[in-house]
Image (cartoon, rainbow, N blue to C red; front, side, top):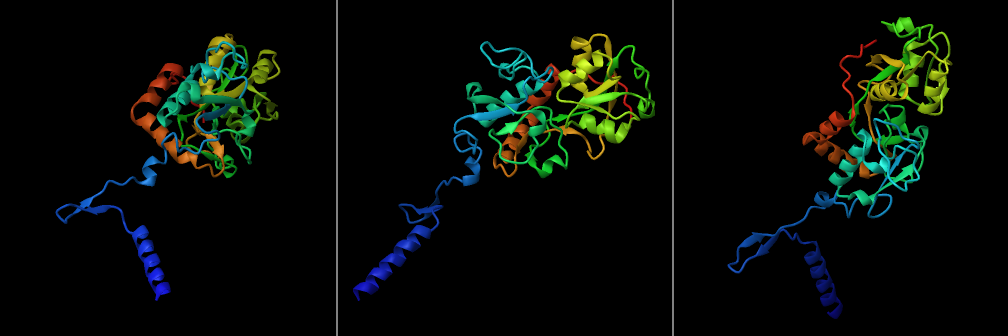
Length: 302
């Protein structure tokens, strides 16, 4: 009998533990609803976000970084000028606005270095996400996860003012050109698969090397994203022009920049929600207007 009573008591306790907690019985005998918190409702709270380091947002980008994506300099920084820590430039300002939307203060954002072509390589990442003008492509998405797009990007051709390609009015006019681009970029993809010049495209480790080759006459033009082309032409190589922009990169429908994450990172969903909030309240558009040039007057070749 004692064993039977113990068994009954155990079953009663188990039933009580599994009973729903949504309702309580009031003093008058009626049931009243009890406020409950859905686990999903707090999934994106900063204290519960599955970040790489607890209490901080670790963001990767290349070193050096370039305007108009990053600008300004922070005293004491180990980074070359411009510096991502300044919060200036389109991607600098966007990153800090995103961090704020996620619930992190400026001093909780920590920058680390990651070369461009490693951001979309498979494997573990020692950061939360990378931001450095990374176009979303199906091939890259096999190795990493992307956020939703935060910028619609066109590629562009920049050349010296006395280059034979400055008068190009079609892609066919570029067949004889010596063109180059940074390794792993969609600009390089566009040269190789859309333009298909007779001379093999020259590949550079970074944009600085490509610009040097252009200035030295080693190539006739370089293909970069359009805002970068504007900056190079206006500030860095004044005797150059943005010849054209290209709307369609082979294999990509509507090229967009996205943040890259380690494959399977659960943080993606919360970041996507934060980007959508910045889009909805006009913050992202305001940042774009502040830092990126108007592209209306650049002819489109396709």
